[in-house]
Image (cartoon, rainbow, N blue to C red; front, side, top):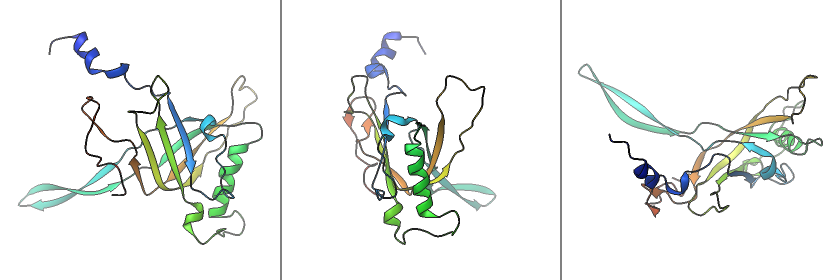
Length: 194
């Protein structure tokens, strides 16, 4: 393959997407359980979701025939900066307490609609726009793990942070899938609930 810097520059539209231009939000959970105020400012790290399609292996005359199986979705994790009032940390603790309390082992509500939320991760262009970038939503999401916060006398000039891990049913790509870097929308196979 010939080295051609101009071909590479031509293919890398708008100098590529930056991993630090994103925003996280959570909507839909009962506001008495979780109030996401400040999350878009303090969620400092996350990921665009992955997905796996399983493989069904059928033995046939000594050979393994592989067929497509079911799709599974890995858990989604965000990293959050902690303020001195523990504002968001308290919200996540309350959300998890509503799902299953510490002492009594009870749920605050019988309806999953009260504790389900929708997580969103939105990418921005270098011009501050979301046009043409990706926006993913996590459907029927709830927290499953709230990490510890490590304390240390020698840990100077840092801000506490922690992670929150969520389970969800599936993700959707809200913006249309783009075809081959041309900017032309391809069929929106990632939209909807299937």
